[in-house]
Length: 149
Image 1 (cartoon, rainbow, N blue to C red):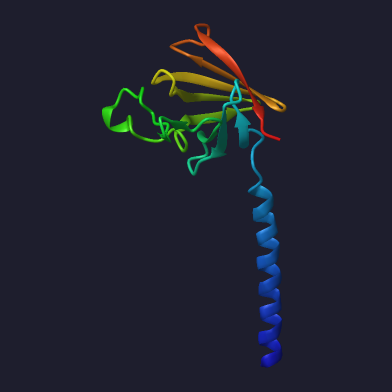
Image 2: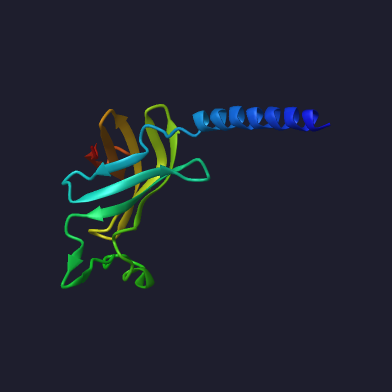
């Protein structure tokens, strides 16, 4: 009886190990996931995949995080209750869906003016082309972010 329990335990351990490795293979990140410098390299943004399989990005570092002795806040936000939230940790990319090397149907928030724009992200190796626009992509602006090395 002890021999049978030992064999079952060994098989269970082997099965869990195999399943664990196969799950790990599927958990590998997407090519835009990671850390990116904005176009002027005064902020780092972390892009990650949310539980809804969409992509999001938040500010995780500012070159100059302080203003008048306190942490910089989202003072240009149109919502009064959000004007005091710190810029570090602020979600600026929301709801992007992957379509090959392009990520679409998301928005980008610009804390410098408090406005939110429709946005597409195009992966170009160590760079991302970020196109913010109102309505149609023709009327917008593109910036280039670089991967943090």
